[in-house]
Image (tube, rainbow, N blue to C red; front, side, top):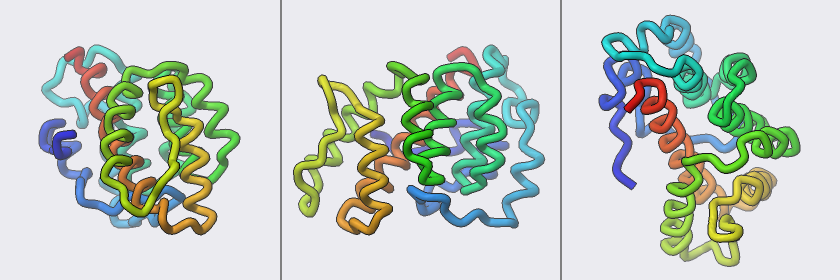
Length: 190
């Protein structure tokens, strides 16, 4: 997977997305100093100069940025109003992050088979092949990314299995980047 370049998504997103930010698999630690910048990040500002084609996908991007900064409640407020596969995906991630694992799986059932799953399959296979401390981790089912298995893995890591933490963090980062890019492309019609 190519490195995440926040500048590819315009100045407004680049200003609030630091790709080197540590990734949490739980609620994380929101930075109160980011709150005002995120409150000012409207769809109009975020997509200025773009031909906005899909407002639902654009809203997904806004929800994603709140989630990136560990403001789970604000992300939730947005994602629960988006009635699309991608909206359900962000909603599911948010519930996984707040450690409401059964609710996360509920929302992943609404996602069904998302276009991002193909890239997640490849990313998971590559990351698992590089792991030396982790064995017998299953994230692929019937040849495809299985978000339910990932929910279970995050739950196991959060319960104190430190050998899984870095894998879950890297997969969470990859998932966020792939889904954000997908939503951005859908929003702009590219």
